[in-house]
Image (cartoon, rainbow, N blue to C red; front, top):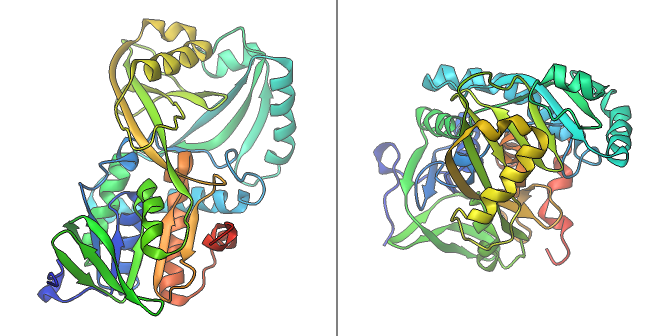
Length: 381
């Protein structure tokens, strides 16, 4: 049975996007803007996994693949965030709460301080950002809750953040405004022969289309069997806590060895995160809470007075080399993949989705660094 698409007149779509997280919804928006009839298929609901629970930090100067080979890509992604939040507000009325703020990367040992100072040498040459070294007293002045026992901090001015669920929801609604359909269906396989994908198999039938884009986050790894191509993406579990302070919100974000803490527009302090190899287990744990709290109090001991009000867990799609996976699936004429953002999925979403849409619509893209994200880079692909 072939189901009717949720599109005008029930016509079959030009493109199917599998996944309703930010990668799927933003890719659908860019494809729809390019003139394609798009249907997004999501087994649960829009933003119900990592994209809806992410911290939403936009720090382009550190992380996997930075500075080499993804610095230009990351900066492009950050700059696109500075424009797309206004586009989404105009389309939907949703404020993604994009904002700029200082980011302090703390050091507690001389070796850590030396490494951070070394990074400042190349970071200082990146246009649009101001970076500098702060001693402990200067770090406390920049963010009064900073642990005064730190050895100093690398301060980056000009970075930012968004509220991830609002961003995901705005992308979904904007895609709908441009003609995309959102359908709650679970995809169970692909329709295809001779290297050409005709559509997808569903629990309740089939849906055909000219192009299929796999944007199912960590679940894309399991879709490798459908493609006959290994796409090495797995879930990386992360737990975040939210705390209520009676007064004095944080003015800068604090970061230390992969952990962070910052006040958010909802009035809460968000702190995280764990990095757990736990399969597809999305349950919160006491051990995860304690790990996050331990790191938090290392960075900001005064936050011991804050009240814990919520704890969440989500599964981020992590590729084998920590960098995104974007492009055509080898051996297929019209099957594409967008996933693997890991802990920087919100930041990288703009470049990942713009690049993927360019490849579908025109066969090439001007997004810098996209060539490093192809599936072919992995052995066996």
